[in-house]
Image 1 (cartoon, rainbow, N blue to C red):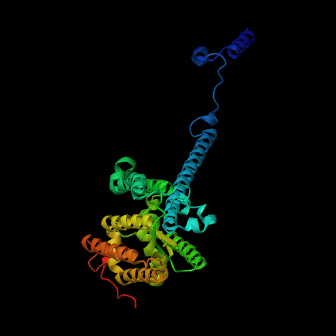
Image 2: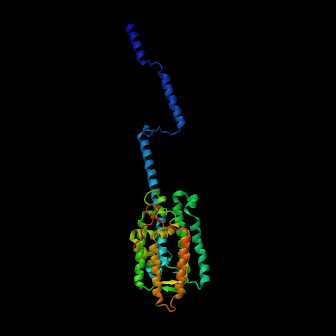
Length: 378
């Protein structure tokens, strides 16, 4: 009995389940049922590796960061490309303007094909029959350039494009309206008031070489890119030298030529190379208006003229000699042209004197500050 009872008790003890096992199993079954119900049919429990902190999760975050970096890099590249193309266009129009006033496109058509307005007034537009027709055709398009150039200044452009792009936007709209003026200008081909007494080939070589030299001097100066707004647009406005305050781009081009090549390069560029082979009445009227406007509107130009007074007078003396040389061969003696030239020179001198010039001060191209003038070159 004892063995039998003992054996029975042993089998009962081995076959008996631990106390509390049934409730634990029930709770586990219930939990699995709730999970299946909440997840729906076909739910597969997620791998622990994809949970936050797991390898798959870290790899996903790394991929997202790489994609964001690629997108930002492409945006930066496109932004720099757009700013670069706009800056190139602005410089192209400025260089083309210097060629246009010297009629380089009509003297060298293969060069004019790559310049705004074909590098000469009226390259594909018929000449006006008289002064009235000349004024009617050109005053509106000139006003379309002068008005925004004088009113939509960088400090006003900040309202629409912000400080970062204000100067570049100003340079761009000025270049666009100037390009339109150069391309649609109607010339007044007669009468001819002066012909340069210089061989055509020499004049072409001088004009082209001076234009190339001025272009290289202009683009090589780091302050040029601050002046037209490129550095601000790229977020580098405070890096490098700055152009003097209230400086216009055409005057700045002459200043870069002076800084790189000295007085001789400046006189050849501004005094001789930009003169056309034939100076017509229309050219005189256009240049006179531009000269007066520049002297009235650009403080930078007035201060610059005060700095290089001797070189400025030398350019006028050179032009006077050219006029005298032409008078030797002119049919009517050229006295009317000479009188007109003298009157224009006096008018410009009066404008320079009354326009709030530099008063004997000069501009430091490194910082834009005003300093005492140096001793004029001999």
